[in-house]
Length: 85
Image 1 (cartoon, rainbow, N blue to C red):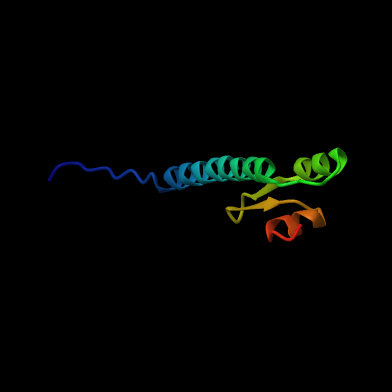
Image 2 (image 1 turned 90 degrees about the horizontal axis):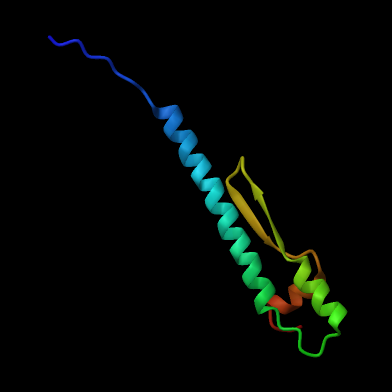
């Protein structure tokens, strides 16, 4: 029988998939935060309020859980999201 040697590349493949997932999360979350900034309706607000809300949008990526959160810590963002702002 021929000499056969098995190479297990599972750890390298899993690491590469993890790295790609993290890169995708950063790209997706960054684009979503940018869209939230652009789509914020601030009609009737002062320039300071408008700038504060738009600048407060951001994202956080939890690489261990492979999760991303996009949003703003400002209360105005809550009212804006539900269309009652």
